[in-house]
Image 1 (cartoon, one colour):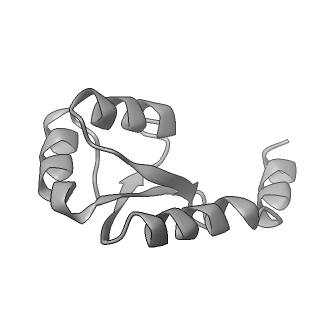
Image 2: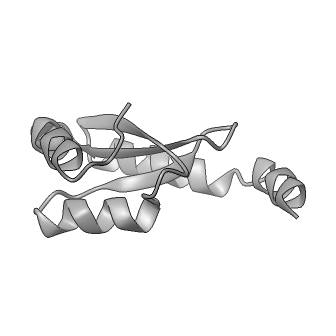
Length: 92
């Protein structure tokens, strides 16, 4: 089943295109990577940042599926990194 989902995900071009569009609209943006599968999913990360007033978008997995990538406004990047590390999120 996991292999089937990986094959299906390789045809998903809309999600990365939407993330790139949001980067363009919300520029300048800073990009983050978080290790996937270590207790924090996309929803958890989004909720943590939103709780502290940081807008975020993107939330796509890399090709190997081991990293969650997302963006925040450049002006909030240091604050976002501080929040995530304080909450125990494994930021790369």
